[in-house]
Image 1: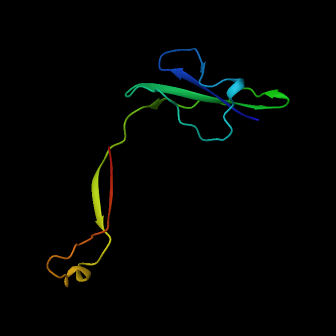
Image 2: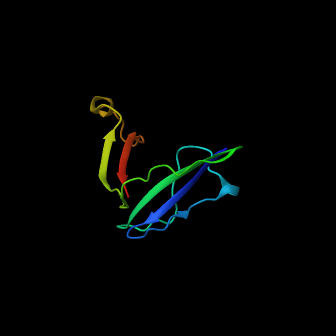
Image 3: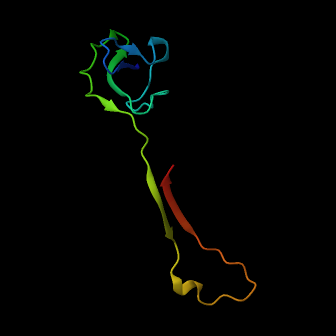
Length: 102
C-alpha cells in the first residue's frame, strides 16, 4: 500500500513519476528532491493497494518553487531581573531561541 507521486514541469503535457511501484511512498507527506528554484510544477498522486492503482488525482495548480527566507529573530529566555546579581568573574549563561532561514 502506498502512493506514487507524479510531477509535470511548467509548459509540459508529460507526467513523470518521482517514485515507482517498487518504491511506494507510505504516507501523505513527501519532500520532492531536486526541484529548481523559480520554476513552476504541478503534482498528482496515484494510490496503490493489493487490487491495483487508482486513477491519478486531480492535478494541483502550478506551484512556484522559491526558497522561503525569514529574517533572524532572537528571543531571550530569561528575565532581565535574573541577570542583575552576578559575581565578577562568574560565567553567565543566557538561554536564547534563534529563528530564521537560511
